[in-house]
Length: 170
Image (cartoon, helix red, strand yellow):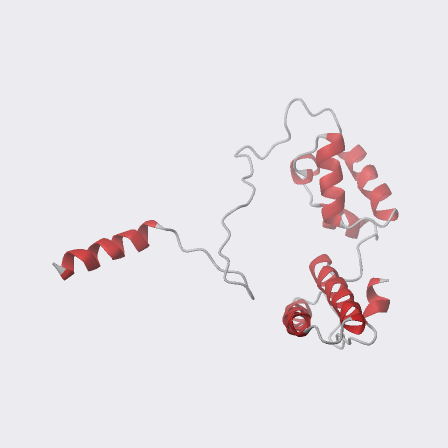
């Protein structure tokens, strides 16, 4: 009777793997890339570690973010994983050459989003949904900033200020 039904329900819920949900949405998206098992560079890739480093430096000087550099290397140069070719990640290569961005990329993107929403709010004062979304974005900024201060990636006195945020992303 009811015991069999409850038992079937628990089995069903155990069969689904628990995934961490998104912060401010109900989604529990499962999509993501799967890295190859072999960590070494593919045999068909003829580009050397030094060449990849030069390309990364050149693109960083143009003002590209590490993820944009990774996408460009993947699409135009056939480098699926920079780490497998150079034994070092893009951001570490940039730090070694003194080209690393001052703000971490995810924090920079959130600040950029907050600035654009605030600009939208100036034009559309009565848009209450975007006012709510701005609060959520800024709470993510504060949370991320707290983490980066603890990890010593940001100065301990760094503070997000909406008035000066547009200068950070300009």
